[in-house]
Amino acid sequence: MPLKQIAANTTGQKKIYLLKPRGFCAGVVRAIDVVKIALGIYGAPVYVRKEIVHNKHVVDELREMGAVFVEELAEVPDNGRAIFSAHGVSPEVRRQGKLRGLNIIDATCPLVTKVHLEAVKFAREGYTIVLIGHKNHDEVVGTLGEAPDKMVLVESVADVDALEIADPTHVAYLTQTTLSLDETRDIMARLLERFPLIRGPKSQDICYATENRQMAVKGVAQFCDLLLVVGSANSSNSKRLVEVGQNYNVKSYLVNDWGEVNPAWLEGVTNVGVTAGASAPEHLVEQIIEALQDGGYGQLEEVEMIDEDVRFSLPPELASAAPQFYSISR
Image (cartoon, rainbow, N blue to C red; front, side, top):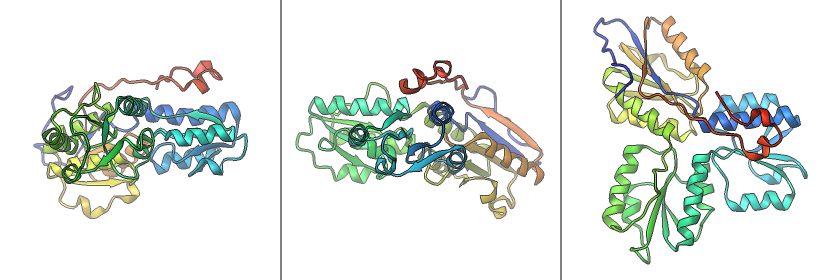
């Protein structure tokens, strides 16, 4: 239930439902701060493997500050300083960094690290691990690298049906942290049917921020004619928010910013819901709200579904160099 009762729009006037929580999660705040603090301590350039988080605006801002984004560590000069993105990396990438003698700062989200540790544990215990996730997503690539000979990836119920596992009594599952709760539930139900003894993590792998933002969309869907989700096209959790809205029969679109909003979407629309994926900056949401208000959406209601107050400490590589930044408080 939301922290306050949602008011249905009975006036017929154009209205915006602004969802909360939205935007940056604790892992994203931490990752962005890691880059900014590293630049402040060591100066430019600081190299970042892959996008630090999946958002074009964030990456562009950090690039202007002196961050250099590369696809692989081979692009980092000898003795350079490199940051691993929030999505995590495989042990092979870590090995490469060590062999190169690079100064590594690990900005992997602690909730992704949790999944990696679970993969290592299940692999050591001899389980075949079914990883529920999206092929080629940076997080999935890193997790698969923890136990490549022991892990298989599934993206759908059909993939579960096609599984062939040597010992069906010794199976475990893990999930990508940014999946759709509903989609994952269907896949899990089928896994349990096929492998009744399947084991899983002690607590779910889908992160709190992903769940909270999806629940907020579900909570407001009945009041909305249109849902705008602020986020980049390669942001898994943002795309899942669009899917949740569509599953509730709400016209839902993913946009980087107001410039991508098609005016035709607003034709005949009275009630607009606005939210943002976990890597989308708040100023992009504010831009959309202002544009909608200029277009006649005079009513604004912020709907807070749950009080979100999660913080992660900095990685030890930075905490020791900058004790004053040890606890992220934003």
